[in-house]
Image 1: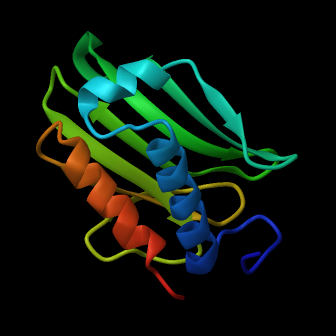
Image 2: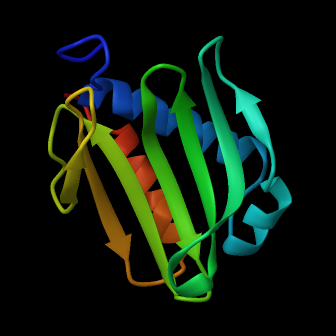
Length: 139
């Protein structure tokens, strides 16, 4: 685990990103339209971890598709969002590190830096590419 038993390392985030990619691939999610097929689904990864897909309220009374990786007792280290109405996508990650190209906006109660990267298009391919970059992180 990270520097404390609740922080996330880059190595852990890479593993989590790989698991999220696997979830998307196994459900044949290749576009924004495909996200609707998995809305409301949840997949257990292990006794404490799961991936969920939801349609949530977003900015300006719109809705966004959100795929989250959740770990009981540690929070949500990785989440992707796609808002078609406002034409943007976003990746939110947290850990004991700073990701290049991401904007830090908070620190959670465990000391993880919460950061996001906004993509100025509702583009699933770009979101998936960002997940692949996170999955390839070594340290």
